[in-house]
Length: 148
Image 1 (cartoon, rainbow, N blue to C red):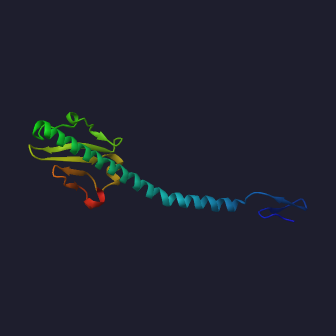
Image 2 (cartoon, helix red, strand yellow; image 1 turned 60 degrees about the vertical axis):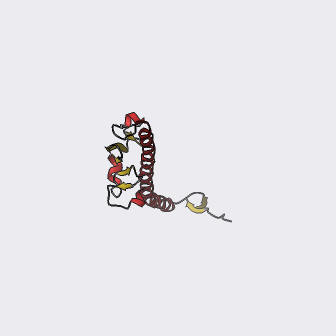
């Protein structure tokens, strides 16, 4: 009697059962694993780009709070620097660069610019901007709502 999954091999005139898999079965399983990996890798890559962008947006919001605190203390936004506000220029493990391109007595513009691979993969949003009146913006061709 043969058990399920056992194969019969003919060895020197007698039959012998062989537990195990055929090469064809292993190749089919490996092809299925390769197909799943090929489908999931681009989705994961896009998720990582989006996650880094959201972290940069969160840092811009924190920087805006620091700018408001600076305005309360100094009664102006002028001369506010990242160092004076306690921020590093490069954030998110080197994927975004923070800057304050414009600051006047009553207004400011904050910017998070993608660097390296992040800049190459996130062309729809590109740089994120935040103004003193909480107006959010981007420099890419995408929609502000989708990028923030």
